[in-house]
Image (cartoon, rainbow, N blue to C red):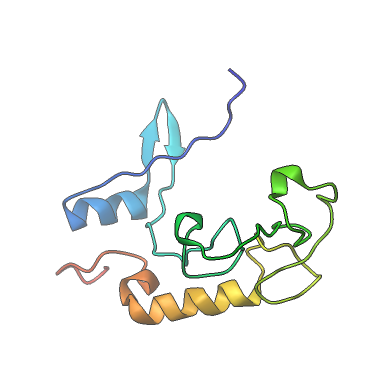
Length: 129
């Protein structure tokens, strides 16, 4: 009750079927859904806010808040409206922002490494893919 959003990850074995779903969408309970192709995204540590590893593997001695960069987790932050990005050392956005130039740089590097990230569909013999 009260839930308005959900996410689902579908694994489609057939590339043509997956492409048709991406192109045409699908209906669930009479509601048209427009799926998106799952892309590889950079990993960011929720402990230190740096790229390339997860908290389980983090070597940082202290936590870094994703909002104010203080030595605590965001849940314990007394200044949640504060904005500071640990990655690019900017006060224009928090560490969790999709507008971070460091995130953009890491995404571009992943796209170069995994070219399928840049394709709207899965390659098949069909010319529209």
